[in-house]
Image (cartoon, rainbow, N blue to C red; front, side):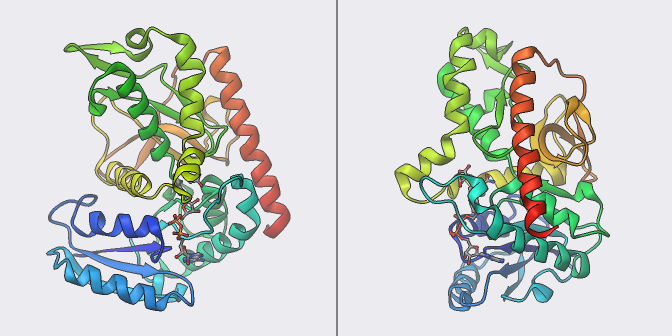
Length: 330
Ligand SMILES: NC(=O)C1=CN([C@@H]2O[C@H](COP(=O)(O)OP(=O)(O)OC[C@H]3O[C@@H](n4cnc5c(N)ncnc54)[C@H](O)[C@@H]3O)[C@@H](O)[C@H]2O)C=CC1
Ligand SMILES: O=C([O-])CC(=O)C(=O)O
């Protein structure tokens, strides 16, 4: 049976980089047929028409249907997976919070539409910023769908952290694992490698022992990852798209198929109170995923004073965003 996957913001730049990977089986596997729903807003019909032509011209064996639409009722109808990219992108100099007001309206409407039209076991990942709070809003308005089915993308931050460490050590990206992103997909996020491992000269070692530079890890490394989105915008005059699309594929592939033994990945998920994070916040935690599309927050990792302070700082920002969102639409 084909999986029905909706991508919102389908006429935008992230979606353009994402569609091909999705439709050729990079996420759900080389045997899983896919129906792709391309949802954007009124006025974008012509751009969607072009996208449909291109997807058609790829002549992909797994892509069994393409449905372009600007109507939420059509867009979310019976979907198994919802990839919520569509939102107003941040421009140079803007903080993600600046976008909250405009985006609260979008994610309330989409939450309600998902509740009404999607499959009850739909899996949702929110990319549009501020991603964590948008995901929280969406979840709030999709009352009949389990809270754990809503996630926010922090995998791009995880990939950035992994790549920074690999570059520093001069080793392949895949030889670094279990980097964690705590908290918000914003400049307060806490990229943490205290439990991360690297493969150096054939031996598994803790990343901080391999790097041997606590000052770099506590300062430059963290700042680089926190501010990477802004740095890309400054250079490209557009926000990250190729790397965001790759991260969406990573996030969904691991959620769908499970994480390998001993490995975890970071996802914005509803807090169950773990690590002193207020229950109900959409906070990025390390999670382990299983092949039945469920996940669990990794428990009992050591939290020292340095980490505690950073984890609380990003939690406080999420609480502020939630309060602000509540003022607009709750
Ligand atoms: N969580 C993450 O790691 C990342 C998040 N982002 C965020 O992703 C979002 C999208 O970025 P881009 O694709 O570069 O933007 P873009 O501006 O190229 O495309 C956005 C698309 O969304 C559409 N759209 C707006 N409101 C919509 C709605 N209610 N329903 C359906 N479609 C709607 C627009 O018409 C446009 O086609 C931005 O909010 C950006 O900040 C970007 C990079 C990484
Ligand atoms: O900063 C932005 O608006 C885009 C983004 O989320 C990122 O690249 O991490």
